[in-house]
Length: 564
Image (cartoon, rainbow, N blue to C red; front, side):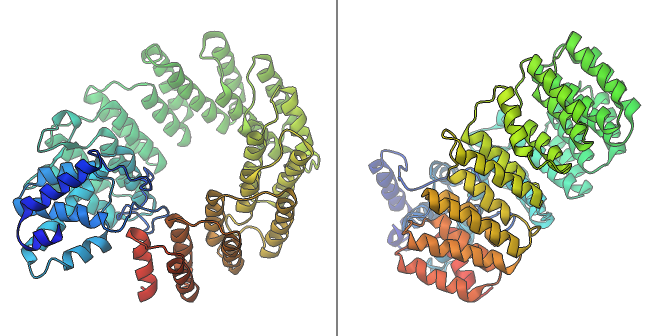
């Protein structure tokens, strides 16, 4: 195919690609190609490091780039877009640059192919709204406003620039604009701009939508109210509410929920209750049961935060009498409030009420009570919780025990670690709920999540867990090792590196087959810690194992070799 490009025969390249696809039954059915919605391999990832592998089989990236080049030579971008969307292969800066360098001295063609690849990569991401939304969210979370603004500019250019190829809404899609931005994408940008304190970009987006003939829906107004609430811009939230009403948009249950939450957070309880009563009059009848409960539970939480206990009791009575009936979230909200105050009489009353109405507690319920018991020094707290679970008719299961242990390990205190090991011991004694690899992963990962636990204590607890693991003959799978490697590398002290390398050595000893993700986690972790020499040794191990890195993994290898 490449020789046909050099001979200026794009038609032949396209014919060869068509025959290639026909030989695959019209689709790329490569067994070991995994296209993960998590954004793995996305070359615009917020942190620049991809924690999952991207599809890469030697030769196939160049095949796709070859046919894209052929379309660029023929000025048939629409066909290139269709070809790209049908493929599971992802572009990557390194492989793209390498391919472009092989095109010889034709700067015009190189520039055109580079432009095609950039547009196609963006279109592919937009065509998958969950991935696109996650990309935007990641950029906002890392406060990478430069890349966030650039991404928005690229989208806007695809909507309005010369040769526009994107549609502003699915209803506006055409043959030449087959990829459309959804409301999820617009909303994600809006929330991201506000999270990054870029009011100017948020205002520009709002104006751009108007110029494109789009009218923000009630769900977008709700997202705007939530974003203002997260930024504690409560006056702006009120202003947005008034603007929404002025434009004839009727708030739904979730919009009321957002506004009520904002007002409670602003310590404006009377106004919050006014909006709550307004919701009951105007929107409650048309709302779904789940959305009604969302509003009521938000109001309940706000009243509890302000310690308006009498009004809480009246609200619960109203819910019992007229609906919606309190659900598990309602009761967990009450449990959390009284647990923080170590009010065990109130906790017992709530649990009894849950039992009476047939609502069984979940992991949050039992973990909340367990933490309250530990807070007042109840050493037998795990035993008490297990008895409570039995009283509520909760059948012991490995999943339930493990979830509680995971919750305990996330509390970041030694008393919670002890309680987690007590729960682990209870599992060991129970014939039907023996701990599995997931249980031990929760414990081992929790020990190195953050730097709250002194290294010597973390090591002692880890040794105790490893002794039990070996005694029971537990064998970790690759996903478990991935979790343990990540948490160990994230542990900022030297012991985190030592632990990660111990897991690496153990994996090699057990002859566990590594995948690209494994090597990526190892190299990314070592690179982040500046362990260049160790990283080079791991690269040598990787090549010795027969792995041919590509995509993001190859990019890491290059960084390690050049020590960028």
